[in-house]
Length: 335
Ligand SMILES: C[S@@+](CC[C@H](N)C(=O)[O-])C[C@H]1O[C@@H](n2cnc3c(N)ncnc32)[C@H](O)[C@@H]1O
Image (cartoon, rainbow, N blue to C red; front, side, top):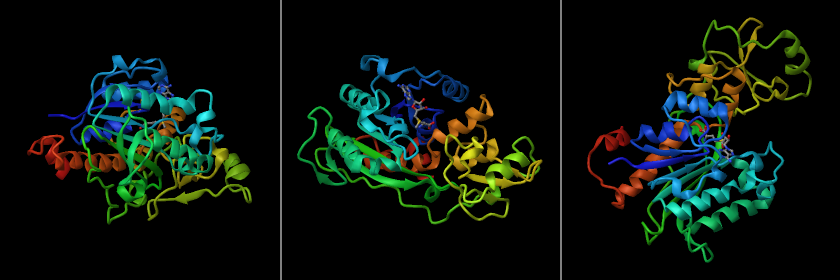
């Protein structure tokens, strides 16, 4: 039996890549950006549905798990911190709620930027948790919407602790339906891996086409007190800084750059971006360079989602919500 999932705010399919790798089957996806749709379709063979606000719940099939990295812009420390007051984007959370109410999946995995924790003094996160939860991190709440009753667990996880050479802190909010579990289920977030991967071995040598011109280097990159670029090479033993969607806009200058290329300093290559985001080598990028950075910068790091999904699936199995018999999925999970 495969666990089915809906991939909302699908981007290029970070959640889908992770969930499929542990035996999940995607039953529905939504993503309105045409460039992200192009990448998604090239890799998964189906075109995501568009604007989620225009999709009626009845057109979404029944699913076991709902996943959503709902847009981080209103909550991001780089955005304007408008939260729920943002005319449309801030309210997309309520589209997630609308679909949870209608479909009542056994579980959900939501993801957002770390800035959600401090947004509006923590009120935004509280609204989210109050709306979704009968219990939060094991503690029962007194108020919750009677139609959306999930045991909710949340934690900030850093992708560098789960097998990628990149610091990428994101809040993960996992919910398990009260219809499935009357009592608080025995869920815990995955422990960090013992071994951290460093960037050096992923650096490509002798590649061209990613150079930063001498002019940009002089006028921006090394301008005194202007950002803190980090320079790496194949001997670097660090984890790179968070890849942001505006990485290619060199003026931002807070990212990680590579020694090499025609001018001595270059941007991370497509393969290096795949590696730091934990995408497989054969993942296809059929869009422009600018879109490629934007798409990876908006995405989730696949391995951390895979670990969260494994923890969730083993919780569902332990409580016999899904059969706990040896099958391909279990083999993958135990691998
Ligand atoms: C933070 S990104 C999620 C990226 C995704 N988790 C991934 O792995 O690539 C949020 C995505 O939501 C999409 N989005 C924003 N508003 C939307 C809407 N109203 N309907 C559908 N997709 C939307 C954006 O285009 C963006 O790709």
